[in-house]
Length: 84
Image 1 (cartoon, one colour):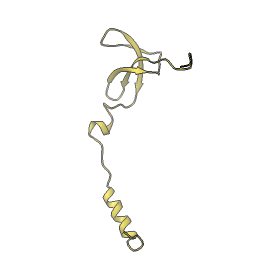
Image 2 (image 1 turned 180 degrees about the vertical axis):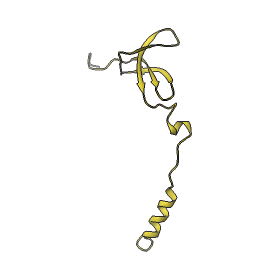
Image 3 (image 1 turned 135 degrees about the vertical axis):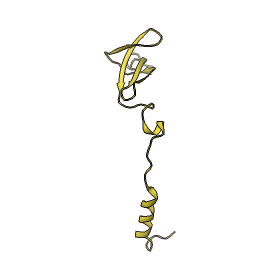
Image 4 (image 1 turned 135 degrees about the horizontal axis):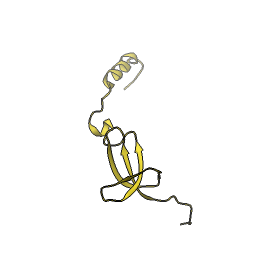
């Protein structure tokens, strides 16, 4: 690898602002804000609006669309012109 062309890969804390959930991981992102973590060390803090802890897909609160109605409408409209 060429020296001095890759970003630094350091531990950071990501905090979900909508659910006050935080997790420690490694990232190339940095921040001037810091937070004291459970292990007693301070890490850069990256604030995010949504994470797997609050996203509707992962929490099971996702709403499904009425796809069946659209398909039926398409079939009715193009019933004579579409060959199956």
